[in-house]
Length: 108
Image (cartoon, rainbow, N blue to C red; front, top):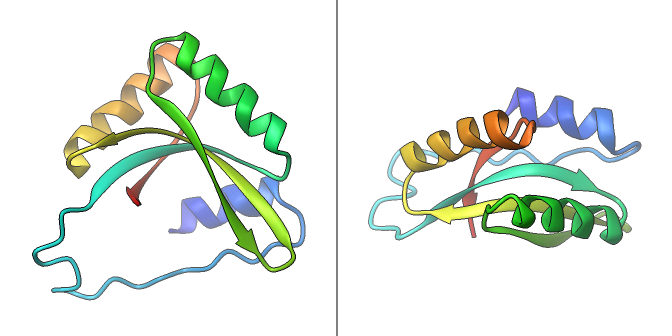
């Protein structure tokens, strides 16, 4: 969470990230998936450009948006994959093949 907060603070001025605590048992029985977030942008086109670049390198990249206060934040993601271990492997592959650091996140 600290890494994510630092990345958001470095890239998006004036936005306070939301931090959600997951308690033991919150995910029991869930069929959630994971993705690797590789960017967070205030401009839709910037997110689209990163998705296109990663797609061109053979990654399953996509973008999502969230309303944070009065701003729309666009996130570039790769995945989804079925479990956290696969997401960690994907994150390492992204660093090696695409030169991007990422954050493993639950998705959706």
